[in-house]
Length: 397
Ligand SMILES: [Zn+2]
Image 1 (cartoon, helix red, strand yellow):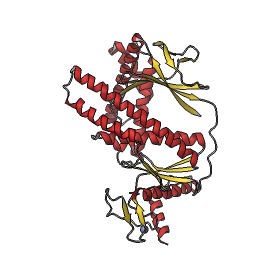
Image 2 (cartoon, rainbow, N blue to C red):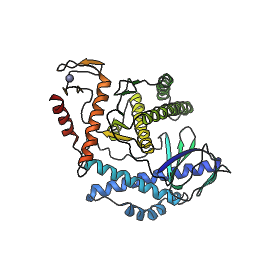
Image 3 (cartoon, helix red, strand yellow):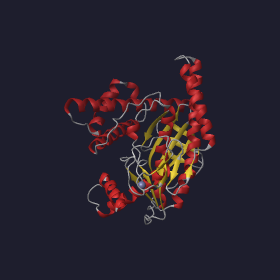
Image 4 (cartoon, rainbow, N blue to C red):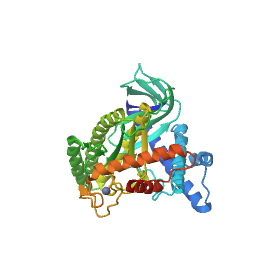
């Protein structure tokens, strides 16, 4: 099984410089590959392979001599990453996703810069070092050790000046067999803005209080930052303060999500969630929305890898039906309910619904249908719209 370990790095001055240069070069290459690929696609409707792009690299290095210094494997990996991003885009188009989300250029203003080191690193647990090719021995804090073959490494630099390394390790173990999916030990989860998550059994999980306080603070810092003059020292200071606060929020949130996902995975044999349409949320002007979207995807990712680890089935259902409008008892679709309606009675069967719990129950029900349908007909993909129709009809009888 693949596992990822993240450690804090403490590079010295010259190493910081080298890391920054590598990250800059990789970002440059990534954007160049995106540009080159897009141009080729627009011109003659062909997509360049990663191999084609690799072949262009030496020429590019001649043109930009500064690209010769960083580790060439990292640069090549950048090309591969870009190529993969483009392939994923094509797949989303093929699947007919509403907003497939064309890969974006990487910005140097992004809060974290990163590059891959596909091979050549050496770990020294005893000496508390990681050897990075072309950068050297970097002091590292290992809060835990690992065993297995290193598959990939990513070096991350945050805009608050912290360095990390993520190491993907194959530990050679087989993932546990999936437990049986049954009604009793399964839950549906509805994630919302107001309540963090609502479970189909009626449980409500609120955002922790400390997180709410941090969110207020980050909004305030963001306002202050936007008022400072571009390029001024004060703006730089405000930017760091804002970045640190964002970082604190994401740390707090990660901690909260780790505990929550571990509990949910341990208590259940199957978990149904709405799959996230990441590409659909490309750019959000509203800060709070952007933060909650990011939180959503990390929550889902945790559920994904923990379900593999514990042999739990994670069933993702597409966001194709307004799960909050459908009565889970009789299948009646109530178009009249608004976002502010936290409770509503079903006009048809008269059941009183809590909006979020009802949505979670619908997600659970659709998850079951998806699971059984895909087990019965492994041949083709499940058409989820027919599932909902089926569900409604069944409920009517
Ligand atoms: Zn009803």
